[in-house]
Length: 178
Image 1 (spheres, one colour):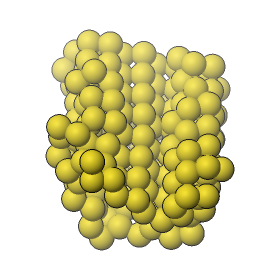
Image 2: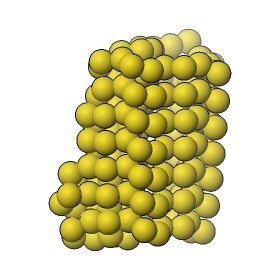
Image 3: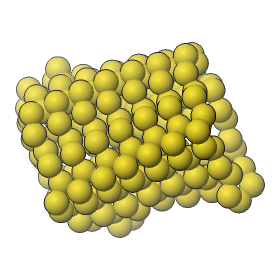
Image 4: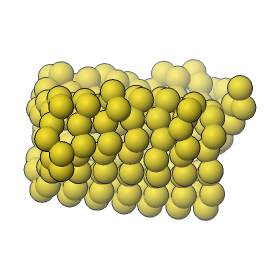
């Protein structure tokens, strides 16, 4: 892992850093309050950024690209604000995979990611509120599943562009109300 932060002090900040070529993922945040801004998270194996266990994180203006093995950005049981990030050309999992988490996603570009089941956005917000506004999800490809966006839970999804995605089941957007 390039950077591992567990129970980090309040206001942990990572800015203008290059995290690249690591074998167990780029950045791992657990039980922390963190801000990541203007970083390059590139060419890591087993994902780019993983956020879990009640972490509160803000990611702004980061480039998360060419990571392999699992999701480029994986968020579990946390609250996040993601704005103006580029998540592209990752393979092995979703560009952004958010499970049982909430917050706000705005102005992000999620493009040219590839995976087996869900390539662009996988957003499951059970027990949390999630607002997704003004993002572009394009050119994502999956071999067996949803190419663009999967939504589940209480999600406000407005003003987003979902174009040019490819999936064997759903290419654009799928909402699961269960």
